[in-house]
Image (cartoon, rainbow, N blue to C red; front, side, top):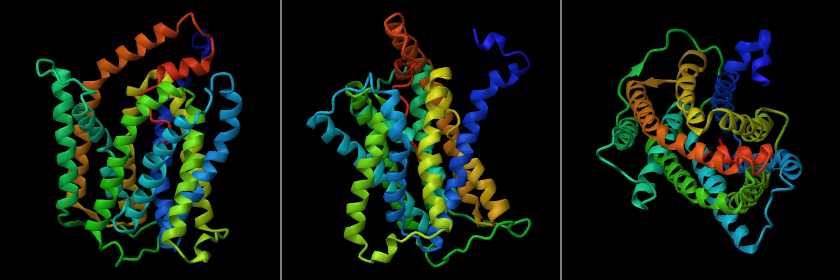
Length: 366
């Protein structure tokens, strides 16, 4: 009924999910540059992941406590151990490898590789027989072809750099870079690919975990806090310099607050709302945008070197991803409608309706 009474704001009501998702992806794109500038400033990536995870958990804690107190299941030892593994795969291990890779590559490369998480997840699901491939169904074929195309794109980006495309004007924003660090391209490639594999396994595991612990905000809060503790233990083992934990009022503090509150807090609420309104397929359609945003900002604003191989590989990855989205669209929409039918008439709780509409959605983003 509210949508019919939008009046002058009818256009905003219609396109609000689209605009919000574009803003979310733009915020993620800006995060890459803030963290890269912070790392080049000397901030330790492992300390960053620790602080960011704890800030994200503390920012989400009051919302999770009050909004889900009636639907949050009792936390047993078995559930806590499950959350511990989820935190390791989805937060501490993956994020540490992911952001450490920025020291050896660049944001454009990292965003291109990240787009292959969906393909890796599908490949693992097929191996575990969670996904059924029907070669007589065009959508099923599209999922397979999209997976292979996306993985081919990442091979292009990793193995072929190609000639450098000259910048058309001097950079508008100067970010101090340690060029000798960025020469370790292969090391950075292994780190970001390993982090994507960890996330792909995490996607598979969380599909089961959400059935036993369907409070998404609470689960996200637990993973952020437990992942922060895990990252802190790991950082204390590999980083013996106590001064690395010191954060001044500079780009380091900005990266922590931006990544924790906006990157891992507000963005989750927006994605949950968009998932409830439009479904998870709609949300995933915007995932390739950071690749475009980062490439444009890197080249035209920051003045990063842009290689031909990165452009070609990015296009191939995006094509493969949209093939996968098209292949999954019919299946996911059927799952959403059937789940909503189960919940219809049994609960007027908007939080439960949100869970019903978005059980396939990633509860914790970058």
